[in-house]
Image 1: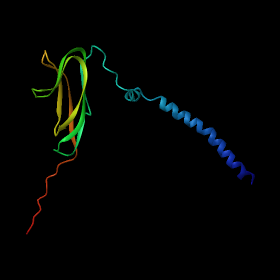
Image 2: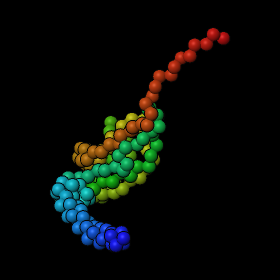
Image 3: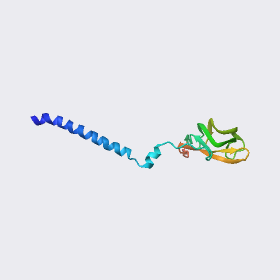
Length: 155
């Protein structure tokens, strides 16, 4: 009779004493992550002045519903160089520039993207006509194209 009444407070005392210890142990495990795991969670450092030019695109992948269909997306091309100059963004193997800037060292370009295959963008310095930076947009699909079945009909 006395044991039944004392059992409930005894269990709650044990739980209250055990719970903070286990929570502290879990906190220690979280704080002792390997350096690679904690480094993966931190944002990448920004490019410092005097480094290689950067050309990036967001999103880097465009997804179409079926294989071979045109993918539509709103793209943002961002480029940055260490010094000011005259730069143009070209589609690879295309002679007409997408957009050009005079005396600039970085800019952002947003536009509608339509394609059914991978597209490569190049940042080219106008005076030197060499590729300074390059990025691409991959096109993928949700459903692979399947050949249509030919159904036989008698009538």
